[in-house]
Amino acid sequence: MAAPRLGGSFVKYLYYSSSSYSKNPGQLFFFRGFASTLFVKGLSFSTTEEGLANSFSEFGKVVEAKVMMDKVRNRSKGFGFVSFAEEKEASEALSAMNGKLLDGRVIFVDKVRPRHHRQSFIPPSRQTIRVPSEAADK
Image (cartoon, rainbow, N blue to C red; front, side, top):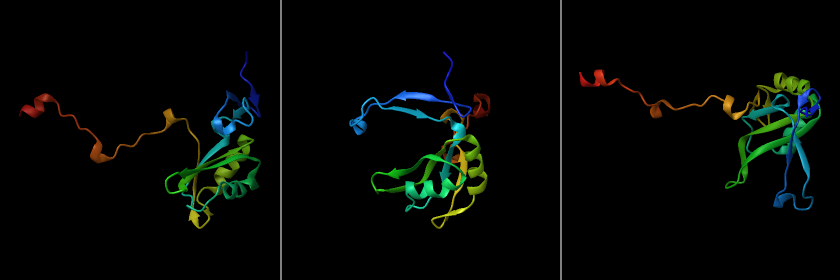
């Protein structure tokens, strides 16, 4: 069976049932590929999902806008995600919105990458330097 496509991108289906969706169990969600989702950082603590969606909606249909929240402080963590219906719309938004002001702060926009493609950063104080045993004996 071939993988389903939507607008030229592969679609991943997920059967999701959770207590938060108990009103409609068995609801079928689909998640677009990484090409149409943008990572947005530098958000103001006051930025809402509605505000984020409205800011990006001029470039096309925003399927979802998600602001990641700090549950303890009940405010934005300063980053979020915007998913578009089409990859072309996401590309236009990326080039137009990167470095722009949103709610008084400069935002940085990038394409979402899978976790295994992200570079990990180890602070210099935590890096281990191995010294060959011959050099250590001298």
